[in-house]
Length: 436
Image (cartoon, rainbow, N blue to C red; front, side, top):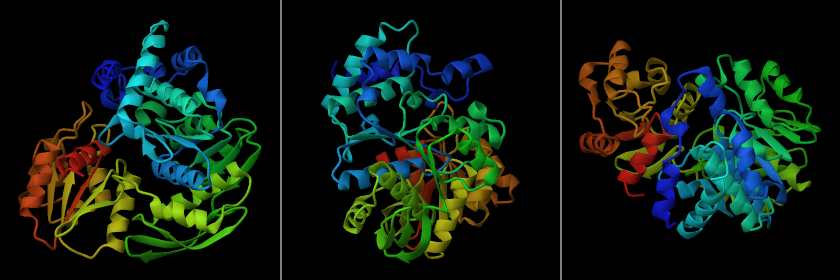
């Protein structure tokens, strides 16, 4: 198959990222089960056994931690595969090798190979299971020294849990995806703890003792805990990011430029350093850390893509992420009229999200529809904005993301700020419209 044919074949499979919550418990159990993906990787020759893995989960920050960890290990001289999700614009983004997304020809080739063996399964695999298997197979083909693998949803029953992570990383735990892994935060933590295997080193970013104990009870050989064994000593604002002082079990890394916005990115960097260090078995050289951090990019996460007016994209998709965005805007950017372009998925509570984003103080709120079957109606979001007391004259509904962004730019003065947020689907569509 060529790339277009391969992607059409992939798109024909059930995609829970698009469909959202299954109608009942039976479908939910089927969606988060390992039988199909285990059979699929076995048919591929169990490629995940040919290299060690660092496995990451958490409610927020795991993609940034994955990118930072992969960058550190690559800068240290290793061949590094990285699997993240979702993508913003192209499927290729999910599979990378030493920081470069898989090329079209290679993606078509690996999907064609997976398609051939998938025929042997009694039930078709899902979209995410296929991409997971494709990534694991490609990493074996290019002979990576390590794979950095981000969980898609939850942990224990996620398709990525066919890997046996030598290092398991947990960024944090908060309420999200309750339709799959809830309803309580302890349920969510228990599901995420499923990636922690006996003999693994656990890099534990969650600091709530009640939740942290759920991960520790999984029996890792070693626990490296935030604010005990690794963390942030200082983080000072700098042009384009922060100067950070970080520590790990084996070293201190002071005065390092981290070119990412948001105080939470310093915490992500500390977790990545700890993960890379425990995987390597020794501290990294200061110049390796500086070079790796200098090169890191995090598209769609507090990403500045325009000036006069400032245009910022952030895929905050839950209340905690929205709060982090609001805090970063207050700390790092000048106080100016802000136009929010917001689109949510329907499982998000719009009042809570708008409150977390500080929509009440926005100059204008443009409500749009994420390009997903799970999209919340823009009119519903606009009604929630009115419920919060926002002047209806400051609320607009524009169905398509690209048209919503164009409308925001049309009414923005040069000193204004246009903030596009609410979902990575919204951010991906905005990036495509802005031709980044």
